Image (cartoon, rainbow, N blue to C red; front, top):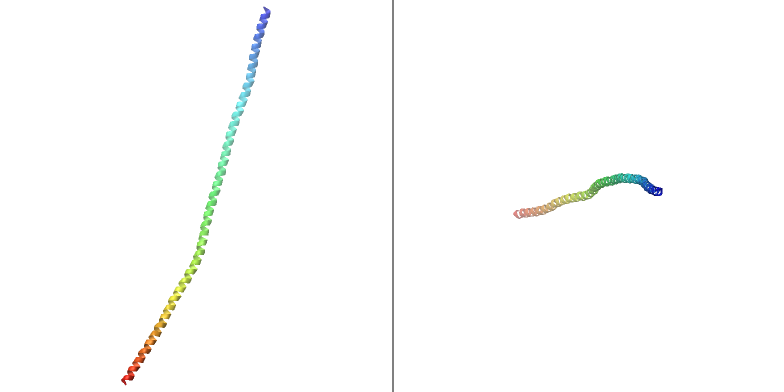
Length: 144
């Protein structure tokens, strides 16, 4: 019968149409999925590259900080040595002046002791000489 054929034909057309719509929809979904997937991969790749660039820049910044710190440390060490030499020189001048004064005083004291020793010996010898002369004169007077 025609009605049965028509119904059967309509059912077939409906299934074919549904499959066609499904295929078309799937094709569009597939295209959308592939586009999204490609963009997601591209985004991930770009993020990875950007992360690498940022890491390099960060390492470069850290390296520059390290280099700057090392240079400042060397400069500080250099200035510390210079200041140490200056302070040492100042201290040496102070102690040198004190040492030279002590040396002069010591030599002067030794000279004074030598002179005083001579004076004392001279006085002692003069006293002895006077005693000797007095004794000699006394002996002469006694002998006469």
